Length: 355
Length: 166
Image 1 (cartoon, rainbow over the protein chains, first blue to last red):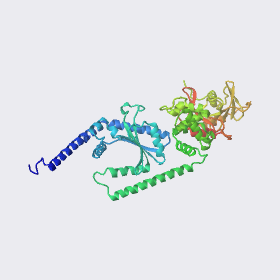
Image 2: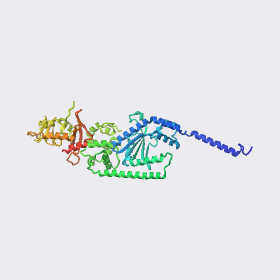
Image 3: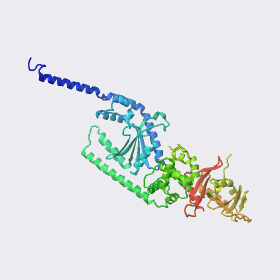
Image 4: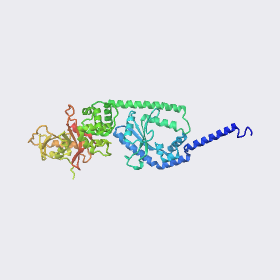
């Protein structure tokens, strides 16, 4: 037996080690999910393209409902919606594969693509006043069903600034074909939107060319500029509102009524300010802060009404408290309201079941 | 069959919509059928003149008495009297009624929505103000012959026109 015989101890030890290593690798490969292939990605994209009308409808319906709710709440904003482009879906699947995301298996993605790619349908709310981002986001959470998915609610406030909610379209949407669809709603300010969009494209859609130091420096400058713009817009809108805050000034728009009541209350308010403006405008000769204060302490009226009607809607609470004074008139008006029966209408007409 | 115009009985019913909560109901003079008769020099049933100028009248309806007031601004106001009215026996001029009808038509304009009949109830006072602070805007539904709430885009204009004429 020579020293190089396979039965000699060092060689045997080395061979044994090699075999054990190969076994471990084989074992670990068996337990690892199978990596998504380009062909499988293309199959998923083709299936998505065929189902795309469903996501377009879902996004459009969410946008329409958001538009109605935001208008009723007197929250000035810009809205948009879209279904993700198939090319974007392809790119995202590749990124998931490349970073070895455990969800990126063909079987998992085939079963429910929408639960992994939660932004196939998306809607965006862009508010002017940065402080209204939180108010608008709270409205989204109150008026829609939030999906039971990880990270369904995210508020990002560092470089990228926006609030995200994953909604699952429920039975309140008439069209059954879109129920169960996940729609991602993003709420952000005008200034943040500019930065978010450009920064995202530069950092994540490099197309193989990494951004230069000069480009990244410009991105930093843009971030500072967007923060400054947020502050300037806030100061502009607050100053303008304050200049109209003479207690005798007629509150001509729902937004002005909202602002006046929130200033008195010292906090943001929830509810249908468009309808509230119509109700009060029809029963008061001059809808001013003075005439409102004659009706009673705003905070106390709201809390009393919310407690008695078991509602967390500030406008509903306020109106319920005023029914003692204006019940006949409010009921006459509510009866003529068209559209879906809202909590406010039910509260005025004396339906005892809140939402 | 629907009537195109209000009658004084409709005004009385409107004023009583919420019991005696409101003191007066303002409408446009060209919407009231009896005001046309006043323009023509006639006194409709239940109506008695309270002055020679044709500005104030009493109206008796269902055991109640109301005061009808006309203004050159085009407004006709039916209100609850604060004391028993005293009719005049003098001849009454119809010129004011004619002016009121003309002014009302001018304010509405040629494009006024046919059949839209608006009214403003004015009533209780809030705080120490003398001028009514409490109002309710309505429109007359010709189909049902009844007053219904109105909270549309003309509310600010109605308040300005009707209460500005007081």
